[in-house]
Image 1 (cartoon, helix red, strand yellow):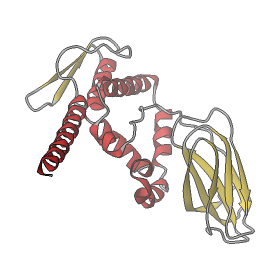
Image 2: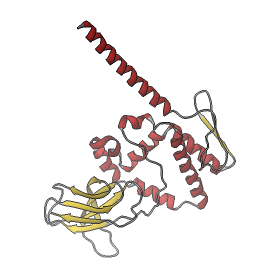
Image 3: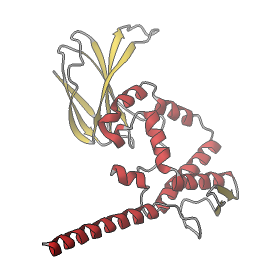
Image 4: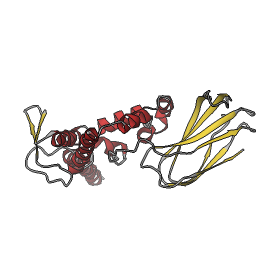
Length: 264
């Protein structure tokens, strides 16, 4: 009996050591390469990243485009998760990482539509500014790709880090207006090829004159996946009241229009 107990303890110890070794290897693999050379197709020429004793990078390049790429590369190596977290925090997309516990924050953050504001700013960039931003984005993605393993925070959350993309400012989406006849509805979203949210707004004042604006208030949102999704919006409706339904994408733009069906 004592021998069996000893073997069991040794086996558990071996498993613990193996798990610790795997965790150490994953953590080490997620650290940036500090020495040597890295060849990336997106690099606009030769870029040098030097680090001091504290790891602070200094980027050198032939022009501003090369410097923007190198800065993005260093950010992608060192701070990709923090960048992704900040982006999701402002856009109201933390629930994709942390689940339902972040939905309340996401609903509040989406009221400000920071992503739309950012796209409008990018849309007004000059060609030179677009070139710098494109170089920076390529650098971020190449810096992330240079890691031998995803940043350790994504391992803990069991998700894959998304690539940084420059999305067009006028991403198409459909808006549906209807008058509620029931307190609850089921919404079916069809032919949808991108992750996103179904957003519900209540129309406060029905002002149809062209010189006036319809006043709306945000009611709720529900996450949707690609393909055909049916979503129950619960008892959020007041019969006789007008509402707007819209879809806001969180990934790449949808290539084709989608269809929303609303059923009491």
